[in-house]
Length: 376
Ligand SMILES: Cc1cc2nc3c(=O)[nH]c(=O)nc-3n(C[C@H](O)[C@H](O)[C@H](O)COP(=O)(O)OP(=O)(O)OC[C@H]3O[C@@H](n4cnc5c(N)ncnc54)[C@H](O)[C@@H]3O)c2cc1C
Image 1 (cartoon, helix red, strand yellow):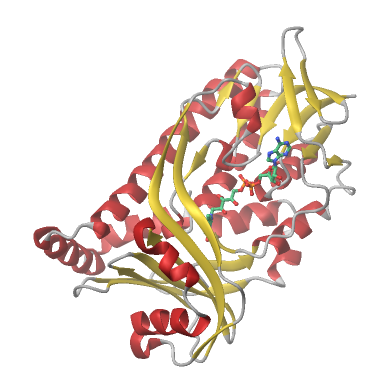
Image 2 (cartoon, rainbow, N blue to C red; image 1 turned 90 degrees about the vertical axis):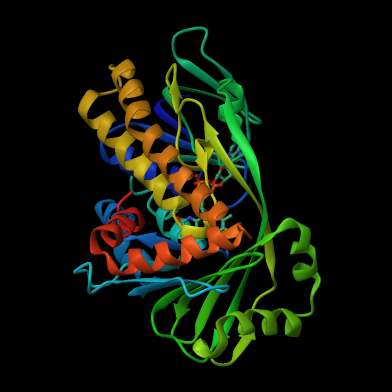
């Protein structure tokens, strides 16, 4: 079977790209190793730019039904006086973004496939790529598919990246993210993130009386927190937020994810493209990984629209030139944040508290932070 564009991976990134490119008039197919539609229970923050992109696909209205808007972000250091906050009013926006269950975004995107004539193949892991004969031929576990352009949206352990022999840098952040949901007494439409001595802890509102929690904990103590009783764990979280949240009741089992950095050395080569987590994966402390992936989707779709698939070299070089520096810059910011806050040195602590407080007062610096959070 032959297509213009073949997308491997139907996560949010791959599904959004499939819709966008099919709306440009291309014959698009998407392949996923999962037997059925993905339905992730993890909640993600979606910034204004990603929202605008979903809107351009005509899916935002549906996603919005399950999206919870947040108007403020407060960040502070447990071990000092450093404090910074951002709010929608300062940015002249109705809100800063939304917290949405990943499965809801996936369901609404995949629900648009038929209408957009996107062929989808489930339960078919990609096994082989051959581009010795001009067109690119992909073998899945069940069939052979051919396309002019192959796009790997197959996540951090990308098979496309491996088969295309694209090198990458990767290292462990030496932290594990523990994720769960809580019923909360106080909800003020605010994301609260505090840097504890063992790693950043964030509470993100998902309903009037519920929040999702993500605590990235140093690996030497993470197991202790994973194996604690629900009551013990809840008490630890409550203790870090003092009186800011009122009563807490755990609503879901704790899930945990080892945290790694990954950055592919090139994002495109020989008609094969990497988009989203297959190209770059960062620490979740700023909730920007998916938003950066949507930034890739927007950029690649725009380049395809401008050049057509015939000018593959132009698309390749422009995509690499535009997206590699942005994502490397983002990864460097996450690394600096993470390292800065894991420092036990008293002078570094003093410096970061002062820097935090200055940044909170000096508006150009705050504006820069805001741009990072809303415009990728
Ligand atoms: C704890 C945690 C919290 C996070 N919070 C946020 C947040 O608040 N905001 C934010 O923007 N980002 C956040 N992120 C990052 C975000 O989750 C990812 O960046 C995003 O989900 C990546 O999407 P993707 O579509 O690129 O990859 P994935 O969601 O990993 O999708 C990959 C798809 O490819 C398929 N696949 C894999 N291999 C094959 C194969 N061989 N053949 C066919 N199909 C294959 C898989 O089945 C899957 O469906 C968080 C990450 C973590 C770990």
